[in-house]
Length: 139
Image (tube, rainbow, N blue to C red; front, side, top):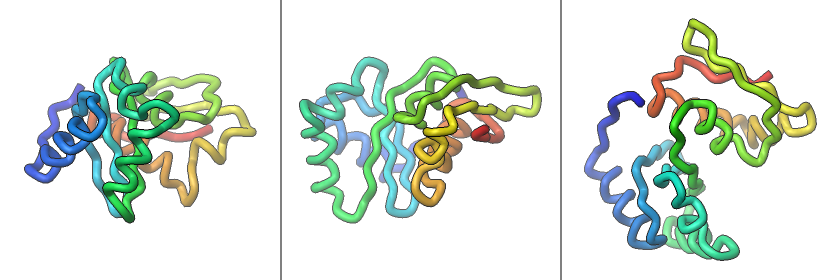
C-alpha cells in the first residue's frame, strides 16, 4: 500500500463514521458531492448495518452527499472487486505500466462505470491512493 496523508477534515469524517456505525473506518475520499469511506476488513456488514440502516443514517446525516462504503483489501484486485460491486467481474490483470484492466460481463458494464462514470472514477481514485495504480480500465 502506498503512503497516504489524512487532513484534519478526513480524520473528523472517519471519527464521525466510526461513531455512527461502530465500524473501523481507515480512509476516506471526499470529492465533489461524493464521500467514499474505506472500512477495515470484516467491518463492511457493520458499516452498512442491518437492512442498510447505518448507510441510510449516514446519508441522512450528510445531506447532499453521495455516501459509499468500500471494504479494505489486501491487493488492488480485491479492492476493485469491492469498489465496482455489484458489477460482475470476469477477470483482472495488471500490466507493467501500472494499469489494471478489468474485464466485466457485458451486461454489467454500465454498473461498473456507474452513472456519469462516477463508480469507475471513484474506483480509480481508491486504487491510486491505496495501491499507487496509474489507471483502471473497464473492458
